[in-house]
Length: 202
Image (cartoon, rainbow, N blue to C red; front, side, top):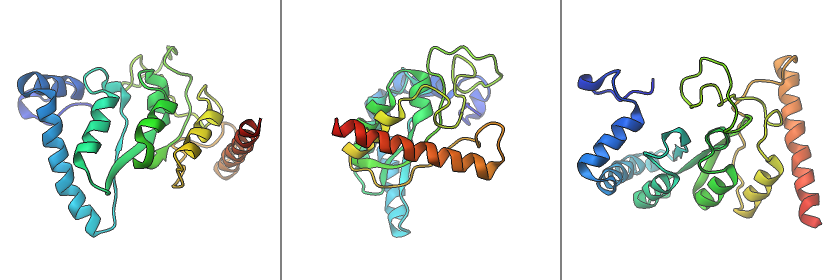
């Protein structure tokens, strides 16, 4: 995991390093153009099956691949079948582009979500997680247990008229059986929606 499948470089370069190397060789614009072309081909087939392709924000690739690069890729793909998956945890713990900023960037091309919580980019957690640096900060806690401003997230989703799924990419609440834990997660979300409505009225 985290390495490009190139036999000559297997285990030597991370994906961001491989991307950066190819950008140095060919230019970032050329790489994005090729990726967009491939996406358009895939989107044509996906559209025949009524399937959408959602590109997830993987903020750990900054600065090699930025939020602007991801939005440019989707724009160049120029297909109704190509859009975004918003991973709130990635945006929050990496600290490059906030969850609210991501919602504004993704706008009408936001297809789906991965919602969970963490304590943000300044946390130095002592775990063996290797994907996000500093290690361990991508905690995948249930919404409400970290520091993502969920009321603001909900209001931002309303502002772009998002009406698709909200997917909790976390376990159940600690100390509860799974069914009860997810009931609590849903109740928390509904409470945040109510508070968001009240905040808008004020």
